[in-house]
Picture 1 (cartoon, rainbow, N blue to C red):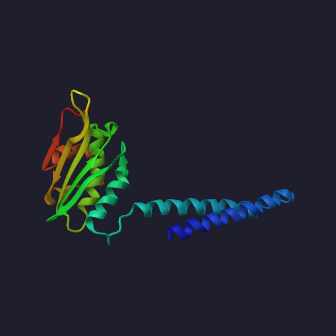
Picture 2 (tube, rainbow, N blue to C red):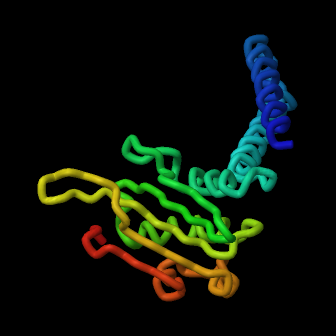
Length: 190
């Protein structure tokens, strides 16, 4: 429904704008045409808002790994520093394994925890997921300046823990306290 609404808004705005221009040229501006322009513009805004929300929704008919991929790319994007954001996704025996590349700017513990909450919540609600295991790979440089993506943060939450979390009130900075397993590599800049 959102795409037809968006198209209707575009067409209506175009037609009413032409009518407004013609009425101004003829020096007979009409309030109805001006109101039609405003109404068309509002319709256009509503349609585009609904379209962007629809694009972020995950199709429940897709295989679970593709649903997880959509959740990750909606939150983190498709690429980071010229490398694919998703290093790997695997779902096995109810465990959702996710390895995600991040850039140096998003490498702080607080930023990664914020992303983690926005990923763990929807993934944990997918049918068949009992455990969420999330690994953030961050760029690290060795003493010679060679950079590689290495494990910076690791989070594991089982079904019991996930059920306890009230996501609408949950403070993402509490992830280290509630996760079944949590590891933060101290060499990553805070």
